[in-house]
Image 1 (cartoon, rainbow, N blue to C red):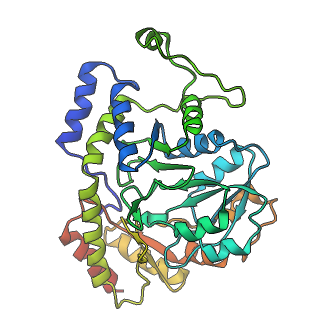
Image 2 (image 1 turned 45 degrees about the vertical axis):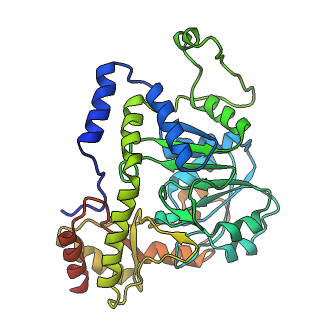
Image 3 (image 1 turned 180 degrees about the vertical axis):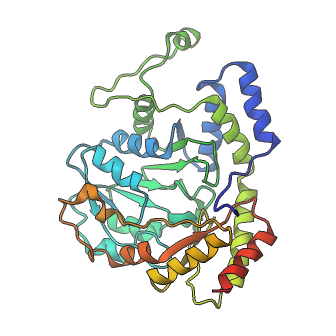
Length: 369
């Protein structure tokens, strides 16, 4: 089976993790601090907080920015369930707007059609590795709390500026299928010192006494309005992340090379290909094709799986149709572009380990249809 996604790991990562294990300081420590420092510089941010997952990063971001039960949060229905789940778990109210059919990202035109004045925050997702049109979106959102969901887009840029450098808070996911991985994990980024201090407090229930004794200037800071959880990263993960970050440019270059092969090989198949607009650089966390309808997608999916090619469908149910929102008043037809995409898109393999021969085979099997 040609895998849809696959982490690119070699002896460099193995040695880095092994060195941490041999040193016996395996929980969060110096390697984590180093990783935070390196990735904040990559994203041109003042502060970084390493956490246990991208989902944890989003939860901490919303709480650190002061979101409370009842606050309204704007997002698109074409996104990961985890985004909606975090918003609902915090007692906030989701407010949806539709997406752009070419980029799969939040549509500025759709955003202008909804009432944004009562919303407290927006979660702006860079879908499949291509950045949202940040300038146009920020013109609409104004002073609203801006959470930049760059879970799928580390290494991308918007108008020459790295994704992750925008918004009050941004975050990356470091899950096994992402462009940069630590197996599990996430990174929260901000330029706001108060948000940073609250985020550090939220990810851990307090510094251990042994750490405080070794660092006399440190103390446990308390915020009465938020409850911390244990969402730390380990030095084993951080050591791996440091190595992965050093290879990120090469990872992205290889993904773009494969995408170019797909763009050329599939250009006259009738399928709508992944597109990048001139304001941003795509890193192809997913290479996603759009069919004419659901029946056509099903034929492609069955044919490719039959030929041992793994495919992905993100996302087969738009968020406003979630069973968690049956009493919300949202109905089928409310967001036609997101609903259409949920029925017609599928992703094909793209990752640094994919060979040219495998990419040619995938093109050949798609063209057979």
